[in-house]
Length: 368
Ligand code: NAD
Ligand code: IPM
Ligand code: MN
Image 1 (cartoon, protein in one colour):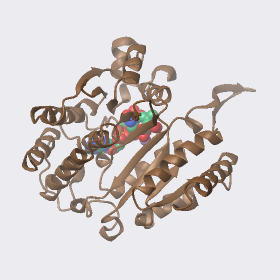
Image 2: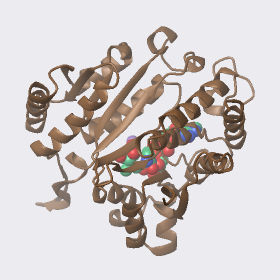
Image 3: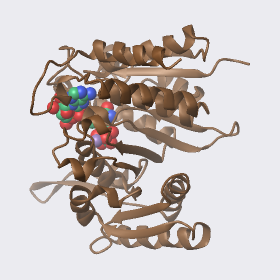
Image 4: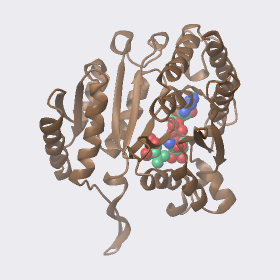
């Protein structure tokens, strides 16, 4: 049988720096005879614009459609801020999500015990936290029409449209309920049904899917602004949160701080199962290209490494190996190994991106 295939798109800024540490892990799995991936690499974002004048070429898009999973680092950066909107680095990522139909974006926020003091919230509030935000990823205000900057009389007007069909809401709701059944069996759906028609439809459809197909799962609804407050107040009340594209973007960055650092949060973007039973999939850290620390060896590679662990679990049925990676991360954190973003108030000497990757490999070795 052919080896499982991976397309690596490291992207811009710290993307290649954190992805180098994932490559070490891929090589480790190969050397140990556990799994050999057929790895190809491509460009996305600003680096693709520099090479080809577009943030994603048709060839790379086609390759992404063929492989078993895509691993992405990050895109964007100040160098590209003035580019025309149509060729901005972020458009490359959005095209991948849309054309691969990756509607279900799982963003777990887990607080490792060793980091419970590094969150901006009190230890009691975050210790033991284990929640997942399921963000709808291919619709909503990110893609709705009409959009653009137009003239209205003698002034400009910027327009984006929040638009959801019931089938789009239904499929992401199903993925949240399925996930909840494997976890704490609770879903909280967040929208603004008090001010938005799309929010009213969202609430109705999530409730209908629940009542018809998942009555065993505990479902609650919350306005997204209250949800943001509740995530800070007592995040452990949640198990799975399902929400739209824009609220999910904002709420997941917020959830990152519950875990100690944005450099800790992985994500999986999944489509519907294909003929082979696996979903199309892209795995990427929640963070961006971090221009402020690029090239300094300061980036925390854990979000990218945990995204690879999600790939092992969701694309390759290698749950035990995914757990091995997660345990290795937990072990190095428990041993006090910290990149700069994980320095607590008591200070200490941070390790570099590479040293963190090496420490995780050493913990993998020790787990054999
Ligand atoms: P960012 O996530 O890049 O950085 C926010 C802050 O978090 C910065 O201070 C950064 O240094 C820090 N940070 C992020 N990741 C880190 C890591 N792994 N280790 C240590 N510190 C880390 O967000 P931003 O500054 O708002 O955006 C920068 C660029 O990245 C923009 O062009 C934006 O569009 C893009 N972006 C891309 C993605 C993606 O590729 N998925 C996600 C978010 C932002
Ligand atoms: C994310 C990012 C992206 C988004 C950008 C870079 C397109 O912020 O993945 O969270 O807004 O979805
Ligand atoms: Mn974001």
